Image (cartoon, rainbow, N blue to C red):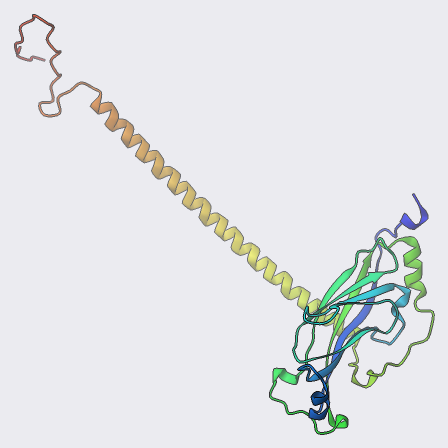
Length: 264
């Protein structure tokens, strides 16, 4: 086995990340200068909760924008992992993370670009760019490497090679408490598991009812077949349905036909 193929059996390594969008509404003067209908300038960013350099385990990040954008697939190979654009609509951005270990499958996370607070679109443009408020929408997530290769495990344990760096949007970053986020994830997982158990119980009940209905149908068909067999046997017994007597055999050619009293 090649050295890079050996893996850390039974080991999981977790690395937290944050994906966020930061949108600012432009002034009327700014929008009038543009040739499109854009109302906002926004940035989508993948970062560390502690501002550390993630390039020690991330090779590149691909941002998949709405198809209406020029070059909707944007590839970023070094920090900061971000894309900045102008637009007027909210949509889902797919963020695909590629890792330095090619044996690790890329991870795709979907994040919603939010331009307005509380979903309200009835907002007037600011009169001055300095008055514009940044609408930040961030999501905490965790990348889990299950049984990573030996050499990748060593890189993960070594961590970033440089110090944390400040970002221009730093003032809009939300502080994420890792323990609190883990509790949220645990609560969400417990809720999902509870729903799964509930659905499984409903499935068992439905299967039970289906079996009961099938058994009743089979029993009814058997009774119908038995009744049909009895009726068929009576018709082939050679008895007159009107008199309850055996039918007289047909006369042969040249034979006189007469009725003989029936005695039993």
